[in-house]
Image 1 (cartoon, rainbow, N blue to C red):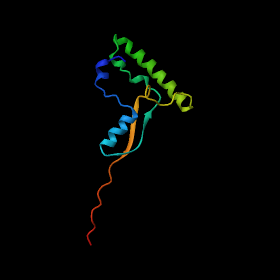
Image 2: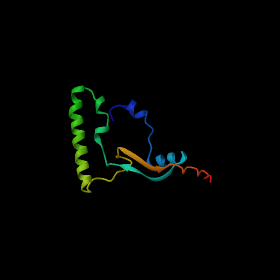
Image 3: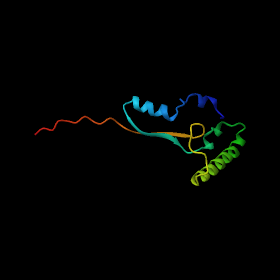
Image 4: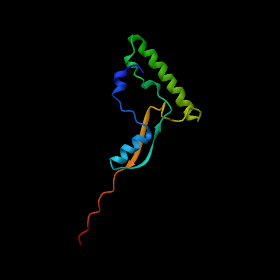
Length: 104
């Protein structure tokens, strides 16, 4: 991590906490999980000093990510997980709308 102040403003959630937040908001959770095994390019390389080092670091991070994604497409990479997955998602349905009486 290269920028602690950016990291500190985030609220860390695991898939269970994200699903629970949706339930508390009145949603029916269908599925919550981690997405992608890793994305090394998300580690804030824009904050690296000296500036001339940013592009090579971003290139290396992108190469590592590409390699992991290629392995993932062949079933050889680590599965998406709490420790390394860059994304978390939740699929949920809102509460059923009330049925309005039909006038005849």
